[in-house]
View 1 (cartoon, protein in one colour):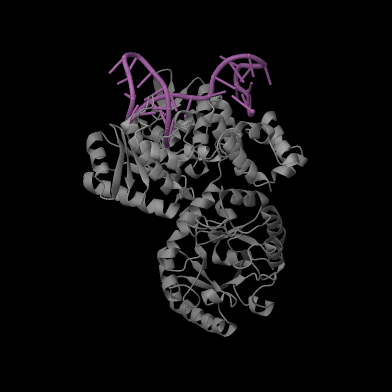
View 2 (tube, rainbow, N blue to C red):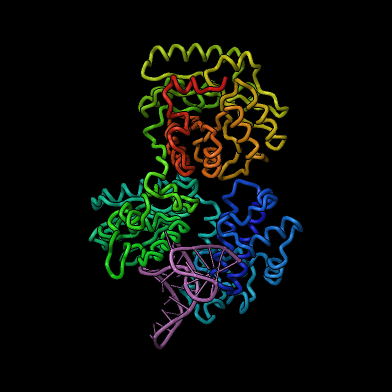
Length: 566
DNA sequence: GCCGTTTTCGGCCCGACTGTTTTCAGTCG
């Protein structure tokens, strides 16, 4: 698939045009095209064959022609001409905070700076500060920006960001007893990684709150501090922005700072088309505020149904947002069990009994113990005789802990040769079987998964794309073929809720839902605490527009077992 | 470069903060 190559090209094209000072809206157009392609599950080449490129939002004639040119020739002439006279390393510097296209153009043309190291040299020897419009403070801020940039090359996981936000909010509440203080931004939208944390608060005592905020014990650096907002960098290297608004604007500000940017721009356009104005203070008709206290009010006065934060990505949610059309997204309280966890029988630190007890506290009716199969020697995969012992133990705990049913499962390896790690006569004895690839990632992964799904004992494909968010791309697979087979065979696909996997991701989940595939959520926990990761799975499910019916974990135990393929 | 519930031309989000400025430009979200 050429999708990702085009994503990178259009993003780079936009950077180059920005550097050259081209039309601002043309630049936006290329960025939008890049984003749309990035979120596309279908192969852009196939869409071209079917003459469907023009149906994509943000892809007009000029960009469609460039896509076609690239598909046919491997080049885009206009793009290559544009970047021809720009050193490759230069555009990367646009990622550095406090360096925008203007500053970059000045340092390149006047100082001949092409790399970050050359820039640092010119800041240290004072030449940068002498440039027109620059100065010592600006120089110091760019030095800080360079440090920030180096750290930000890794976005933080949703798990780490949530923990940091929870800590900060708890601290602020304990110091000044403020009630209305909540996360906004990508954290509230449940994105899998978070670049910085936005916190929104409502108080009349701005000064006191901002003072408390910048004195947060975990603060490494205060980036900015005004009268209504301030920013700090924590010891973990995370930037946190705090904004304070009045109660009459709280809903508007929450909407505004939750984003996404693309979603907000579209809302603004709707407001404008109705001769209204939308900003972080409210929805206005002339000078009169007609909504702003609550988010619901804003959407309602725009003629829309309330859209859950996780859906606000401009992926069609605004177009369908008439009352009754917005899906009733799954809620954490509707999850009746966790369908993937490991016990001390393989590579987990948690005993089966401990997992079961913790699960009852989470309100579950059932859990699936799915340890590794025998070939996963690195994880103490289970030989058949130890399986029997595990089953006896599960039977015993099921008698002792009647509140919950412990299901006998396995995460059976799909071996590099395409076979499963246990024979069918063993597989048929499990309540549920997850089949996963752990070795030979790029050896016919698609065909191997399809073969696994064609086995009637395999109920679930575990972490179907195999990506690790912080460190690994994932298997080389044809996800559409896999979904097609899942749909035909009635195999469930996993939403692995471990925060570094979140696999399937939001976009794949939406496609799976549209294809009629059922999703099974499992934390893949290797500890008792790991069971709490279910919240990241639920957030991702909501981002994929999933409703309770789409997720087998919301079924009663009876229905769950009846819904298996057979 | 895209797009259409006043449209096929003329818009396209806009306010806060900072730093370098003598009234504003650049950056960010």
